[in-house]
Image (cartoon, rainbow, N blue to C red):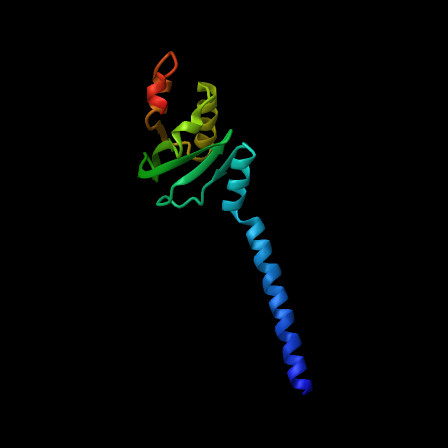
Length: 138
């Protein structure tokens, strides 16, 4: 009878330890931090340095995804091209050219050899002197 009680206590202690460990992992998970920053309209850069995986950026409540492409530089293989696009084009409302330059500067600090290109409609907005027509944003 006492052996069963000891095993039950060990099982309960193990279960509690597993729950605490799982809770801490959940709270510290980078994806959760990205979602929290997105909700609070803060800046957050999520990248695991794997060239095959895209990175995510949230800035002023807009979620951007960046595609990385590996290529050759003068002395090494490195990320040489990055294409960035918003997950939801409608959420771009209110962003300025300075905001996009800020995002580019942060990406350039992580990937200094990469050429950064924006996908439509941001590309047209940055190349235009004026604002985009409203039919391009919809």
